[in-house]
Image (cartoon, rainbow, N blue to C red; front, side):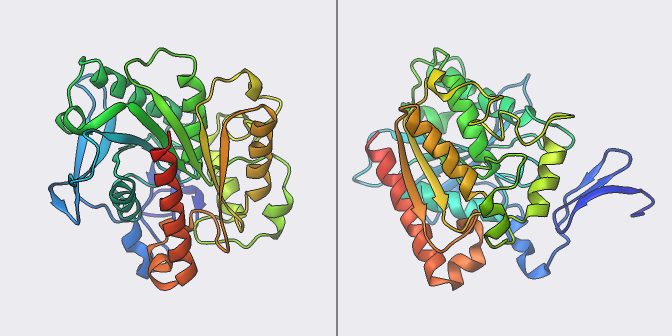
Length: 335
């Protein structure tokens, strides 16, 4: 019992679910890392070369987005590419305004010379899948409406190249990248164009435990217990990890050969618990003759670059984060 309410489920440190359906996402783990989940307010002035705004797409929709705009440099293109970002968190936790995302995506916007548009996705268990995927696709459609002049957002109208939109997401956000890319391949988005997709450590898995799940080290950002619990709360009632959103290379999913996909920069870490199933998806994409480039981060685990303490204190984590940013920048520049 907590505050008179009965706890029916929890993920240690991250999330508590009560019998009345309410959810508490107050961080209850080590206090020294709480700052990473603290919200950072938007600022329309440039700080370290980035301005940040939160926008709601229209009067009828409650969809909210965070825009990271880099300050113009002399050698910038007239219009900057767009990174449409879907946050991770097992479909259950995190927000674009969390400090750990603010730190990463302000840095990536600066490094890659791109406008980042990050979506406040609905979260499970209050909103089970496909709610987050629906929000992500709605965000892409809203960008199309801005490109067509049907909606208006000054920062995007003035600075963004709608002909070069890249889908990017980490962990469960990587799953959403693939889903949205597959949907986009079936639609007329003109004048907007999806130029590429960048799933980072996507949460691809199967019901059966993989070798890497059993042998790779767990981290604060991913343990087997977290993975199992988050997905049990997020997947549609009665679904297993073999669902197409978590196992797009499986029998329940549309065959990859039938999908019209943009070029992929497929990012993995060699100590990720999900490495085996991530690689299974990569090999399936190659077999289906999809345009997919592999970027491997060495000596690090799942979502390592989000851990600001490790980025600041561990030379290899810092080096692998820089390598990841540089790889993303190069992919954007060549597509």
